[in-house]
Length: 615
Image (tube, rainbow, N blue to C red):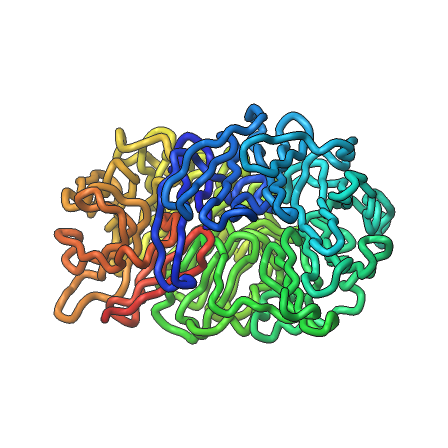
């Protein structure tokens, strides 16, 4: 496995994980280069392959640093000679595929190129590659050994975002002839009258049936993406979407607030079982669907979790143990921790990415949420998040810059901040009638996340990460004045958490600058010396005999970044995960359970919600 999420300067280098016992145990080799598994072009691949001539040799294509080779089963790596120069587009080698004993590598910087090597040393261009905008980026490839056919999907952009054109082409590796086998040309008219734009992504061949191949569309919004299947080498195709019967009873959120689920969007991966020709699996932006009869489909994701978590609330009472806000799939009400939420994603309205989630501390049945949506961008609940009502109105800016929201301890006042995805910030607004009307709060720092005091309904707080200043309101958010200043600045992820049941007790997580605490409502802060760095912080039920809530954080003590709990107000910390339980970026959100001491809920960026109980 090649792992590594981003290629920016702040991101760490990638790594290769290898196993000799079918995944029971793993060894890790750190790479000297970065990999971009969550960047544009993430649907292309595969970029890691075992050499078809020697199982000890592996090849790895990178985005910015060319081609890499290992001759010892992935234990060590060295850069290989490859005739291409990286460019700032950061696509580099988009796939590696074996065709018999020949290795093919695609190159997407500066125009599409396909190269091949028969000896692992000398590379040559494959002539006749299709050109034009629809073939600008080679996305994926699959080789039909019996037919000597290499199928390649193309797009006009790396994707998954922004693709609007593409095609499928077949290379006869015996003769060198290319044939256009595109199932349907993008650019027609969709059912709603819009232009039917999309690209092609996934491709797979049937190892048991020569000439049988499947390909997927990608970024086909109006018509919804599909899987095309051919049994004659691409001469004719059948779309599997129209006859599909989808069963999402195990994962109801896949209905997206509708009565019936759709086939899926962003289908960039597809596979055919080499032992069962009718078992096909495809991946969308939300799940994996599988079939064994080409008609009936259901998620095949038991034991897998890939959601990105933004907000977590564990209510002190009620039927829900947890309410979560997620990227792409909205807000969830968790009546159970061991099954996908039975109510699916919150509707009325349905969100894409949630940007705000808050409950009234003194009235936990009152919950508000904000996020990206095609309809309204905010809603409130009076039954702890089971059902929702959209705000009666919203500021105009909410449609393009929905940001975080807070609700006063008594549930009477809402403060809504606005942040566009490009980082631009806008004036915060206030409502006292469940979102029916809104007024601007001119003194509130633009873009800052509002935080309600859990006891005093008149108090709100905000941390201006631009100036490093804490702002305070004592009149229910009507006006805001500066409190402590000259604190850490420069990172929008610095944040305040308010300790439950204690007025004016604030904790400030400032990443590598450390952890700070105020007990006077943000007028002054003192550094917590037991903590070297703090990324996110939350609270849970106090330990037996303790008066103060348990404090949970993702942070560092002695420069070891991990998940910690403190039962003595931060004087000391106990690490509660180990080296075998790490999940990439985990600094977005964390909370304890107010009803069970020691239980913690942790949000990850791509590994869902992890929860743990004391042993």
